Image (cartoon, rainbow, N blue to C red; front, side):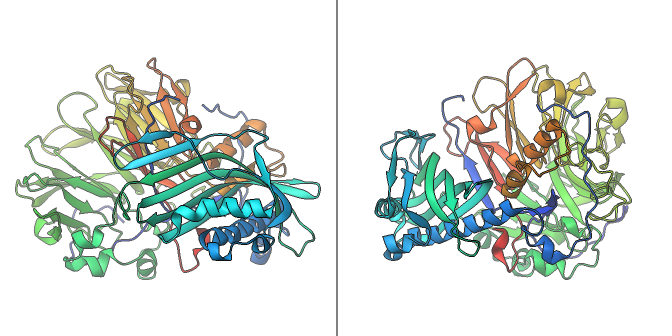
Length: 625
């Protein structure tokens, strides 16, 4: 998208899904899609910098058939991990089809003398329970509490799967995140997920299995010799055959012409039809905004789309359905749009519209009846990703902060000139992204770029994806947290309209592919805590802990690259300006390939829960799931 002061309009377009492939240590990382809801228990339960930056090497000119073979590529542990995953998937099919579960069938997956822990949390007291949800959890089991033999394993697997029998949408999914070779055997660690919808409600079972395997020969699949089980969790809903949340897209949007022709189309459909492929890497990334545009007390929806496809304004009817008024409202612009805000920019009591396009921010004033009039375009760096608004200087007007990813002039994600895969790119500590900008609202839709004079030009080239405002130090002004994809995040403390990056001294740099950020007082201690959604990568967890992974890198660099694969981060505020990383203790680190996130009290019990939107594009081959 090129900057333009005159916006195009059209009434047809598409809706696509998120896609973001990353190269991590030479391996394409993928993740399972879905939404994870973390319910807060009533119990409360920084990485430094490296002196020697690690440089990601330029891609090797290696035949693809060798890259597809981990043994030929020097990674026998990856081959073993794949074999273990396939065996576990076979075991899962027996759990979901108990008529095929016998000691004989189990002999294809385990040795006769297999030893194993209890596979579920029996007789455990719920750690959370309300009218709609019950959670049972145990962290560890006694070391000697094991059973032995295929007959006992058959019984245990039947008990594990019995509650799901007769249900629908049955799933068993192993995700191997560690592998270690020993003499004559190997060990894997994996997350196990088992779920389904029954007459009594949804049942989800999660656990961490540490499994030991032996191989009789190179041609035979490995056999299980032991299973150690920890971190068992079972979640039951009291929704009688229904999920807690239901997909209502068709019932809400199905009556609009744009639903079938645009919204219901998939990513692949529009990827093959787009004319501008320079930024196809981000196709499927547009944002949405909620706000009451016509003053009737009902929230309406503004949907951004890619270059050449019109943005859409859906106005809510009294029955909860939506009608498409994009053209009538004058906001069906064709510029590729990344994010939008419905906010009152001129203090006249209605919701105005700000849209981030490639190269600028489009501002349009609400005429008081849900129609909009274009006001101006604020020039910015080309590759805008998201926007956030706050009154940073306490003058009563909302100001705008925008996040940028690539630098201007980039040819896309594979460009050497952009530094993404070139030899000068520091994966864990990059400062070669595009600059973010702060625009001060001076009234009457006049905005001025005050990035430098406000101090927000410090550490401002870090491939930013999202930002969130909050007065974390309780001094009366709005501070800013910025989640960056490569390298360290920023926490800009606002000192009377001047900002200073205090992320390092506060312990919140969290260098780990930051996608989104949300603030909330999760433990109700009066201090605002921060949660950053990052990528969890099973492949990254396996690879970065191997001895042959970057043997010349310093321990600190290896640690930081391992951190990139760990997952999301919950940082608890101490009240004195510092934060503690409690992600794993709180059970919210493994949110899979996480994108957007928000604190929200989902069950109205007064405690802030966490919603995480995650996943990746899945094509005809579902191997990435």
